[in-house]
Image 1 (cartoon, rainbow, N blue to C red):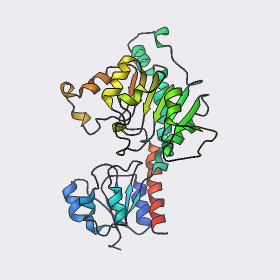
Image 2: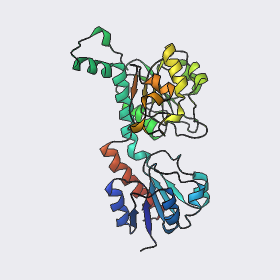
Image 3: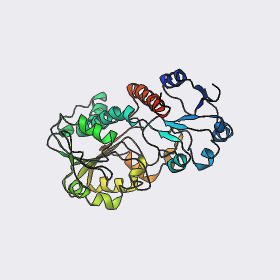
Length: 316
């Protein structure tokens, strides 16, 4: 039994540990460990459960001679050297099925908040200010919404939009023939031509890093609204701020930021990156701290998804 051990580098819903224990694994979690501590012990484990505490790169994975699977409690896999792990026969499991619904709902919620000026209106009413014409909103109905990336998250967003009366088109470089009652398969040229709203649902890779830059945003024929619930470094903040100032981008909903590596709890207002300092002053920008997939329900669903995928690895 001791040979079947799983190392929890991050915490997860208790049902994940219980589910693995029910499969015969012993689960260890060391709250105060740092990367150097994990390097010393990772060779003892058949499985690793991780969110984002450390990067599982070639250096640490080369010490994991018994590792059979890595379970990423989330969707993105950018903190794992997938190519090296897979070359070592390690199964790399993630759980986008677990938080796809939460991400779709958050994107809708942020868009409604932006369109109806709810952040501004709420703050005004709390101060005894009652402005109606100044807070006249927009409707989703009749707009063309473009989605880039039509996997779990992009398709969930499209499904959530189905009752709003919008035209939804999507581009995915790696998928074909996915048109259905929720979306029409399209291409980038069409998105640049037709979009009123653009929503990003791509993983962070070398290909997508700062994909949305000055040149990219300049290609849209219309003034657009931007939603990003994918990864912060997909969007170059300085380019976004430039186009928000010019009016090319009419508003933005950002659950993720280029600067997420910074400790926001300890940021000195005088030392903020300049584009971020400008961004947070804008009433037409809605921000949240990477919580789109972070619901009580998704916490449980993510855990169950990883357990089921481990079962499949072991053919249980």
